[in-house]
Each structure stands twice: as C-alpha cells, then as structure tokens.
Length: 116
Image (tube, rainbow, N blue to C red; front, side, top):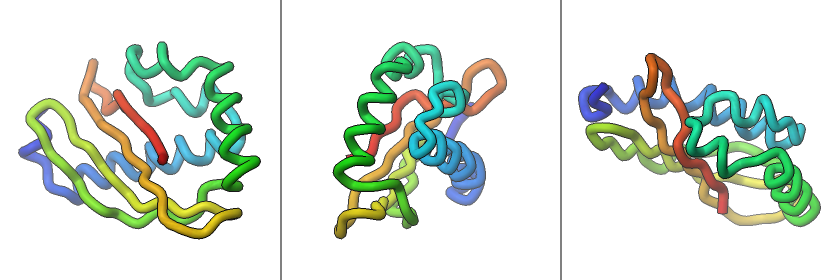
C-alpha cells in the first residue's frame, strides 16, 4: 500500500470514521472501542489505565471534544498523517488532533494519535 497513490479524499474517507470513533470512545472512556483500530504498537502504549487517566484529566479541564476542521493530509509511501483543528466544549481556542494511518494485514490502522 502506497499512501502517495491515494487521493486526499480517499484518505479522509478512511481516517474520518476512525477518528470519529476514537473521539467518541475517548468521551465515553471506552478502552476496547478506542483501540479497536490501533496497531499492536499503539495498543501497547494506550493501556486501559492510561486512557482512563488521560480522559478524566482532559474532560475535567477541557470538557469533551467538539467539531474538527481539516488542516492537512500528509502522504508518505507507508503511512498518512491527518491533522485537524480540534475544538473543546469547556474552553475556547484551537487544539491539534492528529492520527497516523498505516496499512497492516489488509486493514487501515492507527499507529499514532494525539490531541494537544
């Protein structure tokens, strides 16, 4: 799979539902749902305890995740990074939401994700 051969729309059609799921699972603090599209490497980092701690912290400070606006799709031969502006329910301002997609064993998976 060469991500450089995919259009931005094709990548967004893959990334958007995955990111929607991640954000909703984060709001719900639902670990199995949150990591369902993660690589084994990413799953090893985002343990149930880690996710609970991170979600409880950001929800108490920033609220829940609101709308996202696309900033960029960055294509590499073996992955694609998608970057959005992310808004929160309790605070003003723009945050960055990002995922890196890879293709493994016939599936598109998240190898890295963050919001800051």
